[in-house]
Length: 184
Ligand SMILES: CC(C)(COP(=O)(O)OP(=O)(O)OC[C@H]1O[C@@H](n2cnc3c(N)ncnc32)[C@H](O)[C@@H]1OP(=O)(O)O)[C@@H](O)C(=O)NCCC(=O)NCCS
Image (cartoon, rainbow, N blue to C red; front, side, top):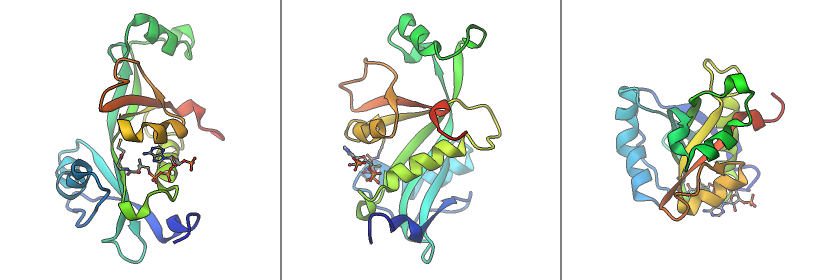
């Protein structure tokens, strides 16, 4: 499968309440386990909604998945008040509130066989536009607790760290400002 054409064979699909992913391997046990065993109960309890990238001709072939849940960015996410005030400078005074609406990318994984074909970046672009075009509620930021290994991938896609406190941790809290999406 060519790098440019890989995505053409797939479409994004919202997992229904009674549906499970039957087969998935991204090389990470926790992310595989969530896909196979947790995505459906999380959906049923309305705690997170999972989207899959499925083969148009074989829906059991899942090339990637991600799940989304509501979030917010507030002062407690920052190292100190000075850093929060710096973050809030993007808003006019009247809009400098205690927290800002965000959407959390709870899980995000591309199948081993599909990595390195721009699928991950394509899906992040999809999520960005999802919350910009015709969004039902206010949502200004995307957030993700990124695996340390995946941080460079998110940075390449415009995400930035919220604080320095977690720079040596296994996961790092990153955000993306949806006002940075072009062509709105
Ligand atoms: C991280 C992951 C989602 C990236 O998906 P992908 O489809 O392979 O990424 P893309 O092909 O869109 O890569 C986009 C860019 O990021 C880079 N990149 C991707 N993964 C990277 C990594 N782990 N480290 C450094 N750079 C990485 C690519 O080289 C590419 O750079 P380029 O544009 O200069 O060529 C995927 O590798 C994955 O599922 N990993 C295992 C699970 C995981 O870590 N999930 C994230 C949980 S927070």
